Length: 448
Image 1 (cartoon, rainbow, N blue to C red):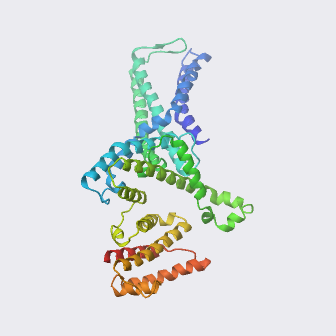
Image 2 (cartoon, rainbow, N blue to C red):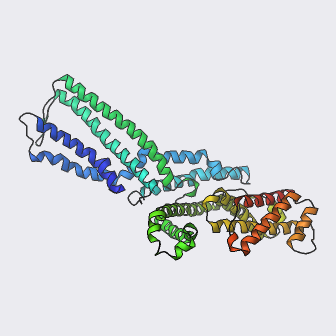
Image 3 (spheres, helix red, strand yellow):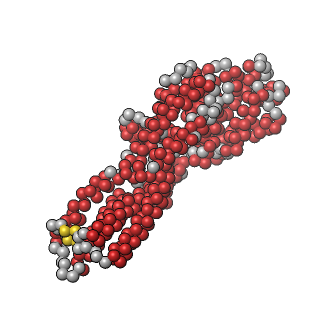
């Protein structure tokens, strides 16, 4: 059975049919009471509400799980960290205004899209392992809810039958006079209610966690008027940019027909799940950046400060103000800032990004190092014999902007860069080299 069939058949329909079957069996074994065929009318009548319950089950499950409330609480508790309010350089009044606008405008929109990210995909999920776990929790919660309601009804029915019989046109149930029988069935139904209550609470908590993992989450989500169109456009663009060759190898891509079976059995499911996660991150990032930019435009900020805040929020790290003082060109300043922030962001998820992204990160950072070193010399009116790299380094060493140890590391990293550019077999980047290069850049800036 598919995920959708599991939720409907096991979560909703099965406990209803099971209950009706027990009632029919009870009537059948009563002495002198053979139920006519139309005793199955309740089963037919209940099919429609069962189907409607399933249609609205994503809304019911979402509200029962309280995932939205937990999500909003998490956003509020980490507001300064998510939106970098501690790092940004703003006047106190302006920063407080930004915080207020985020809470009043952006957070409700993030909460809304978090909800829609779960509900819109409810009937169209794939068969990934994460989705199967989510479907299992949904099925268990639906079953606990349905069966719990049924047993609460059974408990009240038993109490009622102790005092009155049920006499309808299509069913007759006599009174249960013996109080021992009433107590026995009452305790039995109370046990069922207790078990379903435990199952309900467990599956609800588990569902809230899984919704947070599968829906658009944290500060990378926001509201859009036509979210489905926008989401589809970004998803398709992310699929186009997905580094497939790096994931499966150039030989495999070039000989697809020969290894299609191997690909299907060993690779396809992993690639599919990673592609979904990659697409989800890109969608969320694009949506939140647009909305956050709109929010900043409503504040009374200078254009350069607004751009810096957008860049800082998108890449998740602060920008060194010293770069503004060292570099005279505004375009070059923005370029260096972008390279530094881009590097920091990529280092956070280094093992998850593609080889091309790792190489680009390293080369962008190296370009910024070269540019900034030259700008430092110009700023301090220091003029090397020529514009070659060794001459620039010698002046930096002489003026104590660069240490001997840092120079040794720079030589090693530069050799690694040259090998990567000129020899195909050396086309790789070591994370430690990027971290070292970024540290040297920051150290030189601090000394300048």
